Length: 259
Length: 259
Image: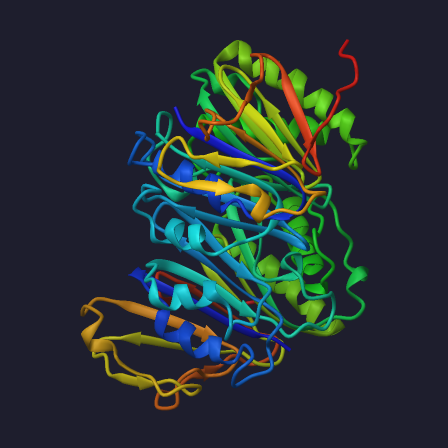
């Protein structure tokens, strides 16, 4: 299994604190030593960093812990390989362009019979179940909509598709088009929203404490989604298996009634 | 205008030396201060680094000059903006997946009437002429071939398309699918192949000399392609305008006769 981390914020925010906790799980406090990746949606574009080295030993990961990149959506993943060898091509997150938007995907879990999900115009470059599932999801969106629909419409379709994957295996999924952050829980995924009044928090995986009131302003709203809660002194919400959450500009969005 | 740099090698090779020369042109010895990007095709996958800061000031560029990433194909670009504002989305190289391969593109020049080249399934995320042209090229490949053809076939089609773009403006182009490196010259592009016996070379833009015989083995073959020769004591070959070169595993490839 792998570890997922994502952030949605209403102002450009750095994720150094959460990333520091996550990285420790990549070969130090956790077994997820088979590479890691981070995608930042920043003002004006998208940037990706990946390494096939364990995140606890990666010079690029170390650089990113110290170099503050401020973004409004982040998707990150550290990998413990199951399907597909350790390589850059098999390192999440994966990206594809659809409707002139850059989509980003990361997956925690395992779907053995992933080839039951047929591919169309999007093809995997690597050999993971995860990238195959992402290509299938992108193909489903492409078939259903010729251009970008209102976000509720693509989220409804993606949720229906995620439920099909959920029946075939375990698939905790993070997906973003740069506007919304979509999180589907198949087995384990938690989230927290931080807003004023901000307090302190202590990482579960390393002895680091942050006082958010010193690094935020009163209007900031930041949500963090992770496989396991990253801090030990805050209340995280578990997403029930089979359900999804959407975050826009840091805020948890109420979803339309599901049919 | 921008500066292009690419490398093709038969063994995983680092580009720190050439990149050091190029980076000086990004705001120090040259006016190309509007961002930079580097794509590495490594054993097992592709990795991209981008920044909208001038390359001569970018902490990520500095990190990459010191951190040796060994790859068999590299495409790099430093930007002086003409069409499209300074932003990550407008920073080259651009990437798209086609036929399960990751394609990378960078452009030097300017094509004002770029919208005459119609788009199909690939759409630009940013607002440059360059990304539009890349999307058009990828669309042409997709229309002509349903799966990856022998490389001579896609190169012939891309050359025909590049000649159409060349009629509409200036377009020095670097393109790779991870196997071959394709370089089209519209106005200015030079290349050099280094192989045994290796000598020394001195960068044109900064006082750095390298003795390649100390960092290579006798079977290494490495070609470098750049807008302007990067060294002052080696013989570079200029590609004639309207023509293209292909490099595979570091070697300059003889092309089939053109109709």
